[in-house]
Image (cartoon, rainbow over all chains, first blue to last red; front, top):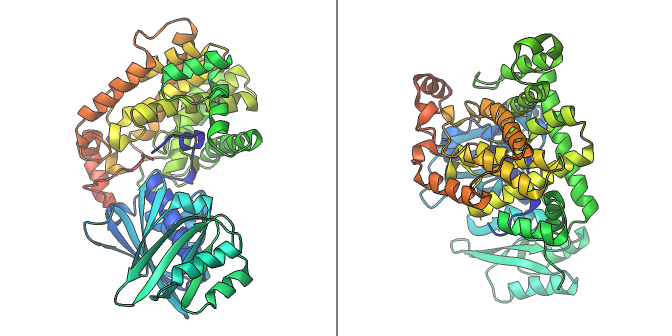
Length: 228
Length: 309
């Protein structure tokens, strides 16, 4: 970590008992839900490493599910997230499993579904409530929770053809929106590209639709700043 | 060039205090203003919100006691709450004063609230989250502290936390419990000293006295849960921070300066076996009692940090 700030020490405000297994887990759920950008009816959690071993004792399961229902890490409803999900008709299940040695011990693969959409997000809780998103729908990404707290995030999937990134960045430039960070990942068997951008200002709904209607762009998701 | 408020260690912190003729809390406030885009009002608002979380958590655990899922935590805060309620009657048989008993209550209630998934402030970590609430709760009663003074205590404590994080660690997985509850007692001791009008030097002596006594403390939680011994360790840690602060208040100095104490703490952490660094593979975690709980909860062989940030 670089220079510490006041609120690195006096914080975060969180539901107990563990910052990595509870607070970080809630953030991962929140993040997956934000990327899914719709109300899921079914969610599956594949719990890797330590997450798979100790999730019950640390309420990692309740925190993940609470996050998927948009509860931030300091939301007291996390404690009752199973009951709340059942009431809402959200089906959930947890499965410990080994995703491979390349993943951090506190990693989860969250698969969200509803009638129209299915998506999986892989993320890790790397300590102190900090998180990283490692994969979206099989595309490798590296999106930090820190970035998601400070900036708006765009997740864009497009066809693998020349000029697509120029199209996206040009579009944002014309709207006078500064790009803070950007990364793209190519999925060979789908021949598609996924880009994740941190931007300083949110796009309006009309702008989002305009961008999504550009030739070659498959979908655009806009994430608000995620509450820490 | 406008002079900086940044510091990395205690020596630099004292320099900033002298240059600006400010107490530690005020240097810490200006450090934050220099580092972050937040206004002074926003910083105070965030601290007041955190102070409220501290008091709400204590009140919740006292008003509605509840056992944690493991069955290990939840019984102590009600007992200490009775002692505070009936202190006058019980005083003759007790050794500590009312402020100290309140500090124990504040710390233990915070820990029990954390264990049952209440909302807490990780200050500096979830595992050591009871000490600061405890001393603030106790000192508020004894010294009649205002909200402003309690916020100042949080700032003083955070400055000490930053120094420890820079030089050593606040994580039990990296440095054992000396880095968690040990650090929290040092932070609390400095805050308790400065809020009573003592100098930055005196406050750092209090921090040194506290941390020196915690060097070597293992992180050995049963089942890897932030419950046993963490919660009561926070409770006794809070009283212990008061002792260190009173010593410094009376003029007792630490022979070893704070920066050197922190370096020593880091070195001892490096020497610790991973078995006693939050893996639940050593110490109290592997006692027959500890293993029985871990087995019952399906928490044997935990290889990861439970309470560190």
